[in-house]
Image (tube, rainbow, N blue to C red):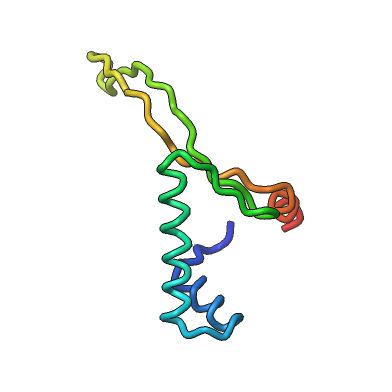
Length: 96
């Protein structure tokens, strides 16, 4: 398994590649992430061709038992964000 690449490292690499300052690049990355989160939390699907799709999905509620096995607990329905990689992304992962 590889190492963890942080958002700051992505900002640094992107800034070096596009010629913006790190502060400008940080603003672009933060703005992009905020737009994706706002769209998905509003129920929209965000698609980046050749990369993937973020979409909201409904997780059905269910009944579970507590670890001690004495009580039942109802878990309510909830909306979760899911990322589905595009075919090109998936293909690159299998080659890596």
